[in-house]
Length: 112
Image 1 (cartoon, rainbow, N blue to C red):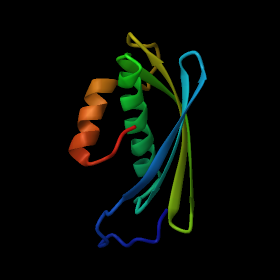
Image 2: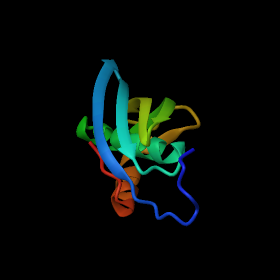
Image 3: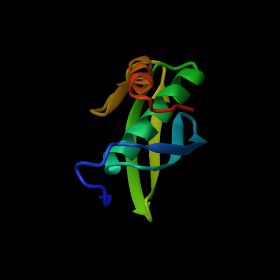
């Protein structure tokens, strides 16, 4: 958790996205940001990166594998892994890339 009080406005600064194709359809995303309210904000940033990357690769869907987050001195880091696919994959944590990218734009969260 951050030291921000409930009265502090949400003012994120998105510090960058690093993308690595691990193998086949497995992709790793490293994100950094400041001003996050909690780990959920970092997870959202990583999901936005994954959704846009999925579209760039010509696919429509992704499945969340895992995300780990860490905060030190106000700098939040996220390490997320997703699989990307042309059709809806099996699993509970799937995303429709076009829908997620549109939502990210509406919320002002940058993508790849």
